[in-house]
Image 1 (cartoon, rainbow, N blue to C red):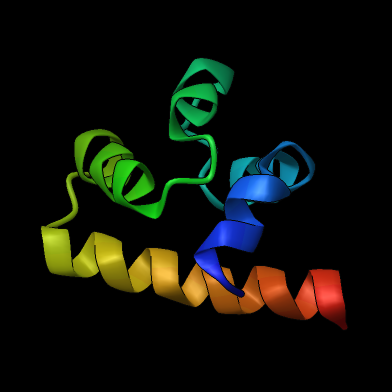
Image 2 (cartoon, one colour; image 1 turned 90 degrees about the vertical axis):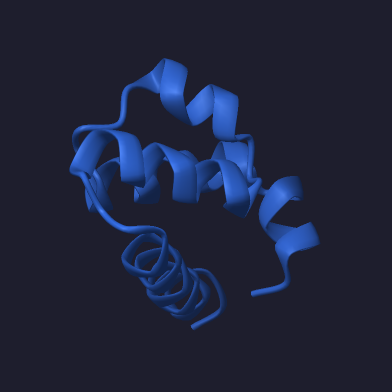
Length: 71
């Protein structure tokens, strides 16, 4: 999924993010607003992931969400 598309569809995708990362609050997700670099930071903060682990988790999530949204 293109990052610009992610930003544009963020309100629709927030539910998918909550399913994936239950520790993220609505406020956390509002701060993310589809920006992958902010999501990476939130995963580091809430889950204690390294930058590489968080970036991989976000990339994997993008792929999974893309499959759900676009079939």
